[in-house]
Image (cartoon, rainbow, N blue to C red; front, side, top):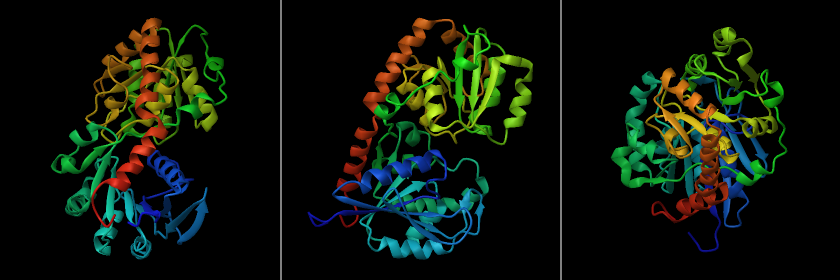
Length: 379
């Protein structure tokens, strides 16, 4: 690449803002950050949920949404994506793929793209076993084609069914969080004002109410706790089932629904304990842990073979329990609820870890250096 030439980056994912999701938030963060650099330009190619191809500029970032017939097996069905990928990749020095996204893999392999390929590996295919049967040969070929594979933690590599074979290509760069933005946000005591017992310890869960988040396990565990009230933020397919499950706990469980960004920050800052009780490998990192840690809150998470227990550390910034173990989870909640000094100790360490290891500014600089300097392709 010529010394004064801007690095042309094409970012590929299923969806983009205003679609809400952890990966979509990262794609948006990377797109905004790199498009603002004087030495780079950024373009984004994603798919419509359903509908015709659309071109737009969002926050200064050119975004193309390929037309789609709909989503099947969690993957868009788009024929125009292949044509658009071939066209847009001609000018790209680097293409960043957010995995898993089978359509992106196939488009790249069929296009003959000769530049540099970066894979952001967020998770193995966990639930779509039928899709994986057909996708596996394509995926393995794409992993061989990749120049660099970036994971958020070492657990993503060690716990993957595919990455250990390509360990020499893997680089660990965590997800980042804008710690200054969180700490400077206007905060309100939105949990405290909902307490029935003003002396109760506030336990907080935030996430979609779907199978792998383990909210049902959390509710069963919460029946065995004392001196606490539980606050659940989020909606999902299991919402009514969970509300029915919580009826017997009467005023100790509060369902908050969907919170705004401002209210979510207030909830993290106002809680005493944050719990991420995920039970399946679909939970690959758990960015919500960082949101709690920024505010100095101890985290209870689960020992999944993913990146989850690498974010908040057992015995350092909180407590890690086995997945689906309601007895261990209730004991962890009781241990922290009964010991304010331990909560403060873990919380202080959590805030320090968030700043030192996960500061967004540092993470983005490491990511750009990796994209620009690692060998591979025509750079």
